[in-house]
Length: 140
Image (cartoon, rainbow, N blue to C red; front, side, top):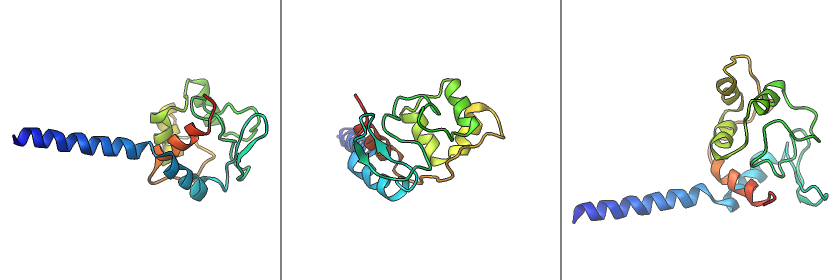
């Protein structure tokens, strides 16, 4: 009987962590607090989904896009462009690792200790919530 209880508890905990990992509303709050000073979210038709800064690239459609490839953003660091050319696409795993330590992620991805990201901010918590939010405001 205790095995069944333990299994049920584990299932509830796992379901809770999975739901928490995909909380787009929490991700929107993270965007407002941590990302908007450098990034906007603007649809191709000009619809302003979220007005923010222009220091970083527009994050509309970033999920599923190759790194460093927004044609309207001319200031990508060479390391990010190189990573995109070598196949880096923003999926759940790469996004989460990148926002936690952008330059560290690029150093590991490229195998180059000199690799640098233009993003100095490091997101300590909520990466998957932010991912869920950006995915929710991106095209299908």
